Length: 438
Image 1 (tube, rainbow, N blue to C red):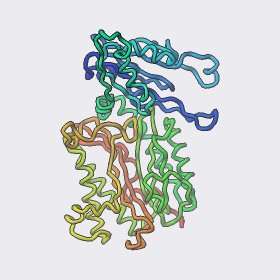
Image 2 (cartoon, rainbow, N blue to C red):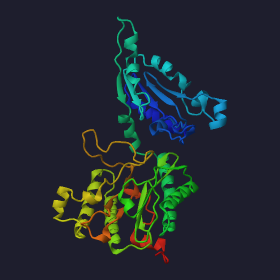
Image 3 (cartoon, helix red, strand yellow):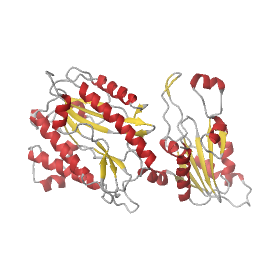
Image 4 (tube, one colour):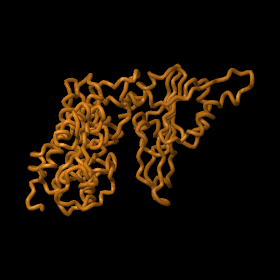
């Protein structure tokens, strides 16, 4: 695997100009309470380039006539390792993680300042601003500390993300294998939750079942906090309380995905708690599913990203009009965007190491980006009708329906990675097989 990270570093350095130095800051461990720490999760840009998954580390990439990779990390410490686990240490930074040189993180600034001599471009990847107060001083160090008649060095500070994040959008085969594993585990977990769903169950039970099932299939964590929302709770897009009792007649919306070796899945399904859709629930569900399927059908290399959103919105706007929930001609509805009252959000995002993965949605000219083979993203239309929508017929109120699939762009079109989670009305009702759930 070290070769993968080396290839990524080399590809990045190839795009940097001569006399450049890049600082990529890893995350530090955070305290949960007193001496109890949160489970550590590494910065994804740092991980993408190094594979190094310990807290308090910094990578430095240097491009002059030759290139160099330095890794600053915690030194070996027997007492700390007995309590908190083994460290790679400075020697391991070289022997295991392929650094040209390894240093203690305690020596970072002392080693960095000499390295900045004759550096014209200082690139920085520091998501949490760990070094934000020091960057300008580092860039100006040479001209503030040299004699008055020495040529002054004026170093440009440049965000590395503009270059690096473009590279993360198109996935390599090794990345696709991890995404597939995350999706596969999540498919099993969604099916387990769907089977266990019934009136009287608490949302937290289903959330815990999802976590248990992805763990059985190789995931160490979820990719984001589970959203397990019954009834009106689903009208809160990022509902995380997961502590309501499910009632017969409600729709359950579950938006949850596992994380496999730092790569995410992101799947949403919506279905009746008692296993049978009412006529109104079915009408909204079919509308959302039709929007999703028509958008998925547009996926192919060369298609514009915004086409997916436009397709979803037009399908749902027409359907809401047909149901009498929107008024006016379809052209008026689209022009005024009155559909947004019920559709609320965009309909997808890149998927990878981050669940809302990095990378631009526009090209350098500001045009919507065209899809390419190897891109992975979600498509997730939804319709939300809260209980307080008094002008809407009561049978529609108190439900949020979102359906989300994970899509890979292929040479010939697309692959729906998450299609095996029941998604049609017939598939859902047959899978849940309700027996006296009232």
